[in-house]
Image 1 (tube, rainbow, N blue to C red):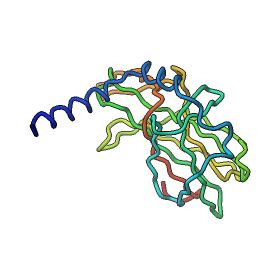
Image 2: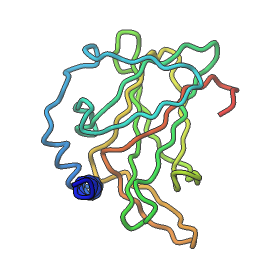
Image 3: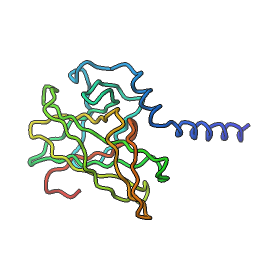
Image 4: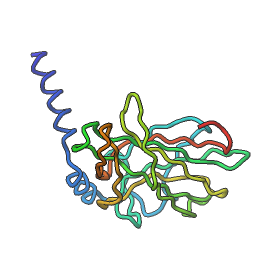
Length: 193
């Protein structure tokens, strides 16, 4: 009985990991929008220079952005005596490049009243190798001085796509997915990454 339940668990994990990007997009489109504005949203606090893994998945609320529907996560931005930077990293879903996809993050900045004050697209991204996670992409965005909150979301469109360079030197186009995890850290300017 134990062998059967272990095999069932492994097969269900494998099947869950096989959802392709078009199916993920269709599932997102079918979701109901959770909030009409960000004034209704509870924003969890962050601490300066701490890294947080923020996941966009079916457990998250949905909002209708200009780029289309997206799962989203909102956070309160920590105060700092100097200019603040938002540092982030997103990794490929698989190291087998023909099957890989990547969540390309977008950030919406909000003021004290939770009104939008600016949006940041994250291209271009810098490809880096992570010992544990393989091929990842990093970026850094300046946070507007009047921003008190940010919302992590993504586009539900096929674009943007990113390029990945394999160890063989071959360049591949990696499709964008509406689900995944992004590591995010708020840092004061001049502090170490």
